[in-house]
Amino acid sequence: MERKFHQELEKLKQDLLRMASLVEHAIAGSVKSLVERDTDLAYRVIEGDHEIDTMEMKIDEQCLRLLALRQPMAVDLRFITSAMKIITDLERMGDQAVNIANRAISLNREPLLKPLIDIPRMARLAQSMVKDSLDAFVNQDPDLALSVCQRDDEVDHLNDQVFRELLIFMLQDPSTISRALQLIFFGHQIERIADHSTNIAESVIFMVKAQVIKHRGGQKKGYKKHREVE
Amino acid sequence: MERKFHQELEKLKQDLLRMASLVEHAIAGSVKSLVERDTDLAYRVIEGDHEIDTMEMKIDEQCLRLLALRQPMAVDLRFITSAMKIITDLERMGDQAVNIANRAISLNREPLLKPLIDIPRMARLAQSMVKDSLDAFVNQDPDLALSVCQRDDEVDHLNDQVFRELLIFMLQDPSTISRALQLIFFGHQIERIADHSTNIAESVIFMVKAQVIKHRGGQKKGYKKHREVE
Image (cartoon, rainbow over all chains, first blue to last red; front, side, top):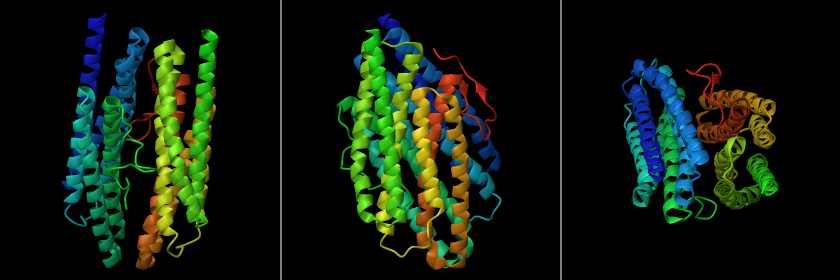
């Protein structure tokens, strides 16, 4: 039974990593569909979300079965309940990729406001955060988790930069307002994806170090100023 | 033991409702601090978030203890694991109230762009959704949960309205752009709060009816038949 349980936990870890890789892929695809004005790709991202949703349900069921049949204790119990929360974050990141893809479809019909540089850079950071937060979780690696939290600050910084630049566009030429707002929206969606990864990374640090990094720093997160579009 | 377990579950329900009421209160306070330009109130909302964070940790521990000591099965197991997910949503709603309060503090220093009507209306709807989604959860009431999901459509509609109105302001008078963006931000935060409540309501419907309303809409049409709850 002990060995079987160990195998089941290993299977759970593999499934979590596979779900994370689907989400990473969806983020990359949604942003590529925007940057390269590839509407077909946007539709493929939207269709692919179904698989992410299915994995969420499958893993949730897997966790419930482990809790019911194996009645794990201590570290294993905490690992399984955390996994159940993490898949919710992953599923919502998938939804955000769908949001980006949906907007890309409509934006691809209009002329491009400006070449996109910071938004793809934010997206690449967010992708790396998804991957590393899950790696940190399955390997219980608090250092990797901390590096994810730090990258969140970079994403916030880039997002502020995107926002300020677009604000100048809007002020100088009001005909750009509508398209600029769309781009602000993209920055915001990627920031939310980064937030979800940060939530996962924070829970890893909490689990491993039994430190509540999550709620430190008074009313706000200690290592970041704030988490939304400025 | 059976009776003790029943009492513990009852206590969990009461704590969940108390946490939801703190979140409702925080949302109401943050929006009031904006509408009535009450910066002191905004600071109180920010300070109060600590209590919400503490409750999240306390309830999470309570759930882990129930899982470890009582080894619940079937419906009780699903109730406890769902509670663990729900408190994450509640905690994040609290963070969104803090975001609103923080922005209100800075916006209260500038002249008001326009009297706020739709934003407080959205906030009231969102508050009612927080309350009812939690009531639906502890009483396992799918009809109430469904009404929460329907209110989410209203919130989205109001948010679109707020957005269109502010877009007109910006186009007509670019000097309003910066303040209008702030108000768009508030609408967006309230929409996110409503989304969290909808997530809770959807999980209630799933639990009770074993239907996945969650993954409907967009490319994912219709209610999906879902696995039986273990």
